[in-house]
Length: 342
Image (cartoon, rainbow, N blue to C red; front, side, top):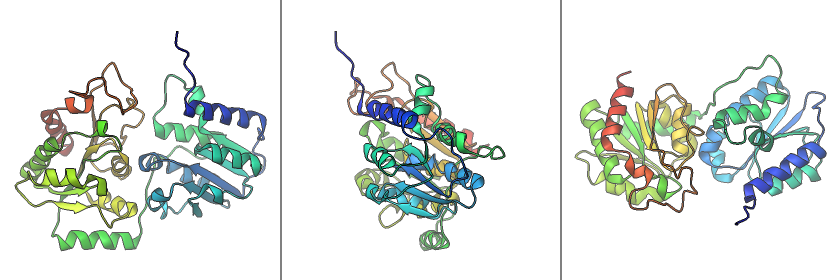
């Protein structure tokens, strides 16, 4: 018999639960004047958590709200009017906060909460334990984490992203320089290879969007996606455009707000588009069903769920035909028609 030991994440969750129950106050007391939100996570995770800042601000309008996040995520939220300060180094968590909201932390953030004696803390671990075996949608998980500290008059809200006038000017310049009117964004990348739909299939979908709906195509992503983007563009009968190097996440947010359509794998950019209500299709592979699906009104998901789901997204038991590859072009085209005809 093989003994199943807790994963690193489970051990951290357990430590957080014990700390919350043994070391931190069980009553928030007076309205907090300093709030730290810990979200040491990826782009899509942050995009599904931004309603937290607005809800905390609605409850505590005079509090100073600080966000601790990864450096590369900063530009996604730096224009959020509900955040007063952003720090991107765990070592900068160096003072006492009345309220600490741990949306996703590390051993380091837990130890600093203990060292600096946070007066009151709410965290992800308790919510995951409460819903063990039936994980909530990520947006709902983030709401439940902060629900105990919200004022009674504050109601749930959807995530929202913000960009600056300078971001809008940069995007306008890009669109005007390239004479781009109505357009679709395609993001063919993903953090894991098993999440990536075939570039040739993206090319067929892009050609359809151009031929059927007259949408110009803008490819989004990072430098890591350059090879796949080049492969897709080489198969198109029309010029397409690249919005990758030299653009920030807040500028990409602005681009999503102007787009007529978005097509992409499960990834951070998909959640950014969803936050703006951009009509979209999300292509899902080995990810857990439902938890990270887009929830905007004009969105659709294609997800072939096999018996091996969920997996570690690295080792595939069907390497010759992984789940993401089982999504057919014809299915995507049908969804495109359904969404764009709504």
